[in-house]
Length: 333
Ligand SMILES: [Zn+2]
Picture (spheres, protein in one colour):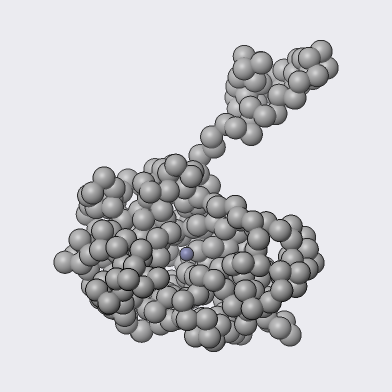
């Protein structure tokens, strides 16, 4: 079975004409009929390269890499925690999604400005590999970049799925980069007052992964320029110092909204609903509405770290929130 699978795959990958494709397909169909064993399980188990997606933004180039994805049950225990699970499930079903499961994906982005390679967030890193995450560096390699090429690493905030990839085997994963950290976020997580609180795990992770890089870091606040064309905007709530970024080149604009919204249906269509991941729920909801009102009003594209890959789209304002419209060819023409 393995043999016939390899033949099929080689024939399909090669520059074969229709005849060459059709022949192994027939072979395979016959094999299926004889054994009545589905062979597709092998294809499903085959480890695929991480998803990458590249597009132009004016004179900049944006590369999105899928660091991984995490399926979870009980959406109502994460999103709409102030609603009944039935209400949450009904909104999911209305949007063609299962009511009792959801998938969260993780999309760091690398922006090539022509003079800098700026990486926004770092995924799970080595700590996530057992679960199939932590694939950022693999994805960068597929797009032709080495970790040494990255000149600036920016953190939107300091939760584990954003800072896990900063260090690799105790050393900086992006050895030639300088860093840009939000001052408020850094001060919160490094404060020893976090010990013995629910933030203790995060505190320890920041001490291990972020603090060792502080001497190569610039600490920023609202309105700071990261590099020409990229400016920080305070968007506190999801975490105490959560930052988003306005990216502009040659009249094209993209807002990196990071974790302002964590689900393309539940967080956008119902921005007021409480989310377990939001550390200050009222502030996070207020920020969500402020940011996505701007995204909708300005009709500008946004890249949301947890949006469905490639994590870029637009929003249309509706009565109770926003409808997510995934990007298609807007940047290709
Ligand atoms: Zn996150």
